[in-house]
Amino acid sequence: MANQINPTGIAINSATTLTINGFAMNGVTVISFNPPDGITQTGAFVISPDGSQITVPITVSATALATVREVVLNTAAGKLAFTDPRGSQLRIASGIPEIISIAPIQELQDTQFILLIRGMSLTGATVVNATPPDGITFGNNPTVNANGTELTIDMTIAPDAPPGARVITLTTPGGTTITDALPANTFTVVGP
Image 1 (tube, rainbow, N blue to C red):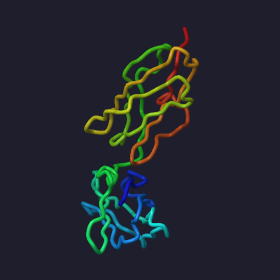
Image 2: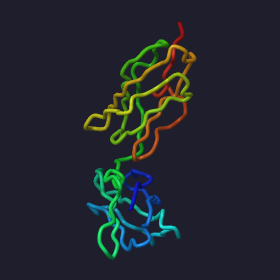
Image 3: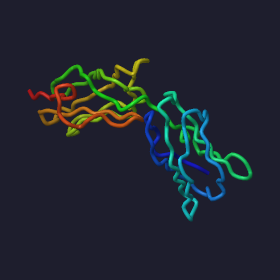
Image 4: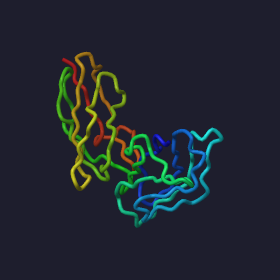
């Protein structure tokens, strides 16, 4: 039985080693992708001696469509299931995300609001972070527009959040935005 793949996403025109975690996977004979278009297994997959992990090198072509693919594991007896079907989902993303601007760029301590992030290749964003994270929390469900150019997420600043600048980053299947502090990605917590 398989549990989860890692990473859960990859950018178009890139390569990675996909890791599949689970148990009793020693009998896997074929790994495929559904739909298969644009994904190539570039070497033999390797199963750990205890059958708890499989690694497989893959490449996503420049012409692959940005969409969700299913990782399919087959044994001589048939398809090996994932404990949760979502664990088999591999998101193909259009590119490395980039933040162009955020709004607002500052707020007071003890405030809850919606942060708007404008950028490119934001589709599939799963995580938004602030560095340093002290006193900042984000909602669990970022919302991205159809073009992948705007993301909104609930943001809360604690009453005791230290005043000062924070770098906002986000992660998509294509990667994580840059962590350098720039005017486009810097948010400031304002004290009383």
